[in-house]
Amino acid sequence: MDQKSLVLVKPDGVRKHLIGEIIARFERRGLKICALKMLVMTKDQAKYHYAEHVDKPFFPELEAFITGGPLVAMVVEGPNAIKAIRTMMGVTDPIESTPGSIRGDFALDKGENVIHGSDSPEAAEREIKNFFAPEEIY
Image: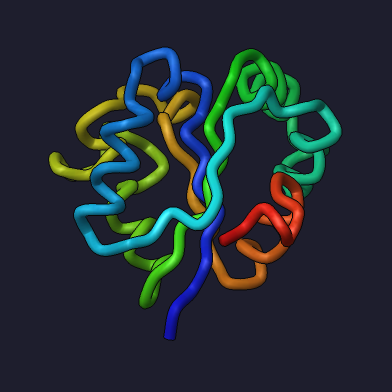
């Protein structure tokens, strides 16, 4: 069964010129890009996206990072897309990510780890609505 996931190329990934590389990896894997846009995340979008972290001490730094420059938001679709994308991304801490994963190849810092992908179908549905109207998804 096909699933949809939100994927963000975070501001550090945009600064490192990794947008095309990341999209190419998903497409070569057989996943479909259903929606794509570049934007600067607003503080309201950040609070919604990271709602579980808003009251944590690290949130102001996270908010400053994620709203501090352009990012690329996309909806990626395919069979078991959420698990496939999360495996391709690597674990949150890039130092622990295996070589060949996106984080393992392109990041060194847990706070600036290049990419985000939804962790469940419920999260994907909520996160996609934060960035895309239904008519923007093909």
